[in-house]
Length: 324
Ligand code: FRU
Image 1 (cartoon, rainbow, N blue to C red):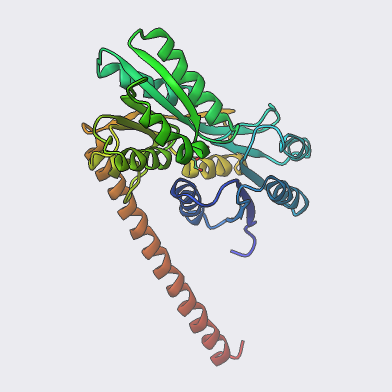
Image 2 (image 1 turned 90 degrees about the vertical axis):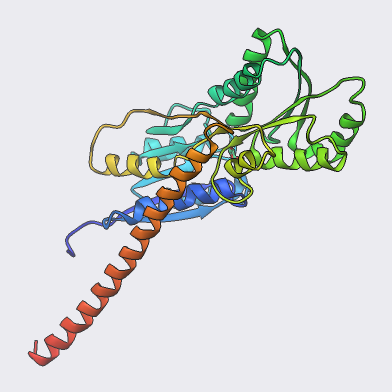
């Protein structure tokens, strides 16, 4: 009814280009569409930190009831996040962390665990010697820092594992061919890449040198869909991917709880797990089922909207007829 307050939730998304980000946006939109009393606006910063600052400033100045942020980097947004928080606007941080405790809730998987899972997976294969090329994400975001820490923690404790090279994503086009050419000096039998896209690119470079079968590739994210993590595991490109859920659904659920004055924990940890040939199909089937449900819901909502429209035109006609 007209008395119901329409709450404004704003989401500031740091990166826009990849499927993982799109999945996060979509999850939020689907979850938001289930509530008639909220309006979700998504702001795309396209990896531009100044733009992300402007978006947050805009939400602070325009009466947004909850601000959700996936911050590009930990430092630059701190003053704005603190400003929002000090003004009493609830702030939910998703996936990447900021260097401040002044926020209402964080939701995301633990990236130390992600790094640990990757190293534990390699250790579980019981190779006599696992020589690893680590390919890190290129920014200084908290997932990059923490995946590296978790990975190396396990590597240090497992005698058979050693990281022989560590490069950044942006360097691989240039450096990986050289690294592969010097294999006789330092053989590499594993690549741990900080996401599935990077892992797939590294695999393509190895394939161009005929080396894609001598190296096992491990990525992160584990998205469903063509050429995403689960698919790449199923078709043998990746040996494994470490699931990194986007937290889109959960972020909006937390926002709803805040708006209803329910208590929310400050840290909302999402689960991560190893996906390899043993569970890839199960994971795919689960996601396919969820997608089907979501599509059904979207179709239903569309129909309901159409019915509402016909109903309101009909009732307008009725009003005219009745002379109201
Ligand atoms: C997508 C992405 C993911 C990664 C996450 C970390 O933009 O790079 O691949 O897991 O961001 O924040």
